[in-house]
Image 1 (cartoon, rainbow, N blue to C red):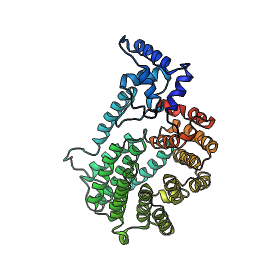
Image 2: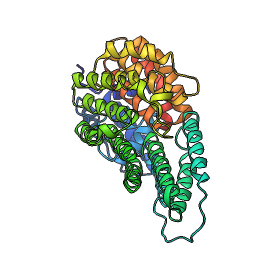
Image 3: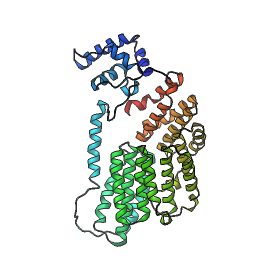
Image 4: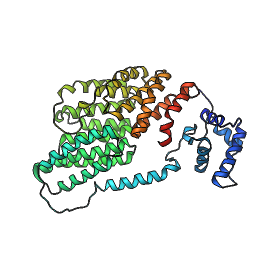
Length: 415
């Protein structure tokens, strides 16, 4: 195991700073010019600490100077990222994202009452057909181009619910829950877990108002998905167990959704036996899925749906050989239309190959995943590539590690 910060050392040597003392002097001079601050300084002692096993974290203005001088941000130079760190260049982008979120959130919080209007029952079918189109568009486009469109349609559904009655109102509540869930998923895929959790909460509220046990179970699984991304295995299991309390009343599809998500929770707490039991149990229900509900149909349209979940869980459990074998089979069957999903699977496959100590294979698989990440800008895919980078740490100074850095450079530039 290395007891030095090899990433910073490599970057220093790459720009021709042969010694740590020279690097401290050169960086100080660079910072004085960049910041127009003659008092900016970096001591040789500070640089030696940075190249040690515990480099700490530089002040924000020093981070900016390091990036300008070495072309990398501190998190790519071996420093330990503190909670809440955001690259200075992204503050404006984040402000814009928050303003967009506030605007989109207004769709869920439209004040009432609204003027009464006649609501034709055919509108339920209309919104159902639109929803299927949004699911397909998500596979092609990724999250960013759809959030505004889907949330605007949710706002219209919410407005109609306030005037509708009887079966029409119940139908609109059901489809409204599905739209809210999709907005939550789009935010989750875009990497904004706060916004995702908000919209998952909206989904649960509408599901409860509909009094539809299938929707209520679906909404709990949606909340569990956010908990999975937060790494909270116990929370995932709690929510999925709550969804399955009424399992006798649930359709096979909702039971499958809850069981496979619970398997992810089990993988987060290191319980392989539970993972296999849950995935196998869900597999026995697949042939029984025959409902016409417009939401939650990934188990129907995703080739190898449950084995994808198993491979993901195996990767999380560190079972590199098992996960590598599964991903090799699964990726070959991904349709061309599922571009973003293919990228996620490839990134997970690459991490599994690295875990199985096959670094050359990991780099080759990562090439296509990185190209898809640049194309779709899916935060979920980028997160998987960061996991791959950590898994490849043993080879960071080897040719494979350098190749991976080159492969991921276009992703690092904007992520």
